[in-house]
Length: 317
Image (tube, rainbow, N blue to C red):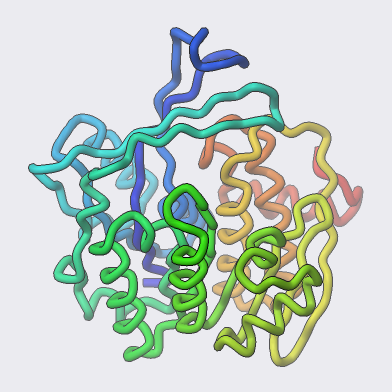
């Protein structure tokens, strides 16, 4: 197994036109969840990925499982819960760059993931464990499960990758910072956005943010800078990677998961950190040009075709 990830996936309802939700009456049903978004992206690039979660024993849960199984993700560690429903959420597209999300995930099946759901041999079989800052904030059970998964990974020399994915609505500011910094201290690779880095460290400069996470325990830090690209820092190399120019942004949600997909795929392929981050900025950009969280994630053939084209034109069309 290349990567194992852990977290909640929900059914996403997106209006078929732009505007406030109160005026919408037709929706498309897709799926979305930070960790499974990354899992889908990695599988499309040819990597072996497993996903750990709980789903409600309902039609939405079956829709999610059917989709992820069809993508090729190992779902042997996904459990149906008879007591709690699958979470859902709605995306409000006011403009292509002004997007609001409304979640209905309180007390969902995934919020009842427990440490007992974890199989140590399964996690130990992976090269990386990928977790986000969303899952540990969903419930006390989720928090304990994420900590246990990390403990198993570290015990078995599995590298831990942490995307803070800050959601301020899930916890008070002080507790949010405490939880996320505790997890980052147990992680090998940390992937914050610039604003997330500022929130967690109090620093505004990318270099200082990276240094904070290094002192906190991370060996590699990659900071997403949006239209300014990304900054990376390891013990062997530091530097900036420019963003790929875009002709049009259709839906910005999911770009960070696309970025994580590219970085992790690059590392799995043996690329150095700079080239892995370049792949991350490319895939993050591709995601924004398609409606939906996972619909813009490329397969290997498309990635190679666009990579070769961008080398010649320095532009994604």
